[in-house]
Image (tube, rainbow, N blue to C red):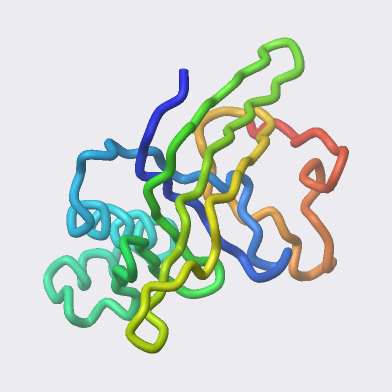
Length: 165
């Protein structure tokens, strides 16, 4: 079944900040940008901050160094990696229990900008997708071993993740 949704994903500039699952969340497409921005900001803090920091930001939100920013209907939060939320269409999830693979595909909306007083298409609609090995719930686990300079065991291309005990 194809659906519209707010899609939240991790965006990473390089392998050193790669996470196990690119897709973080799928939210109701009727929710407003501010509500989604608050959720994205919370998700970023919960994945990157200590409990002490989270409590501090809850009491003093203006001191949070990573506020969600809304630009042209898209929402970003954080540094590398960062969270990115946007409305998508034609979202489909297929799961193959025999192979342990889950695949999500979607269509990104066009991106527009104001250039010389005219609305200009920066990028037309384009497909997106992500394939994950089903090892449990969605994970924010970093999969790059910084000391060895390679993917952690089981996370490299063609490898099977090692199950946690």
